[in-house]
Image (cartoon, rainbow, N blue to C red; front, top):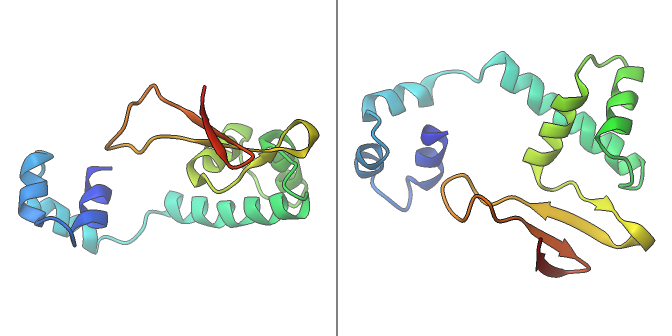
Length: 129
């Protein structure tokens, strides 16, 4: 996670300074950049694309249990909790609530914000939970 942060912000801040602040070595960061993506991460990326397809086909009404069942019916072996985690991580997937109102649950970023704070967006207006 620290290396991801450094990679995402290296245009704004010096890599050496971020490595020192986050207590990681810059040589470790550059070695991490050269490594290929892990098989698990590749599978998660592929699975997330499938989740998005199923979610769009359901007119954005299916939650993780139904999407999990749909993926297993298509022959993708994955757990229900993995599907739920990928849907949370994606943050793009929203579910329709009561009477068609759109509810998106936005999690604060890993490196900033109040970790206990969760904001719900309902009908385009952010409300604290």
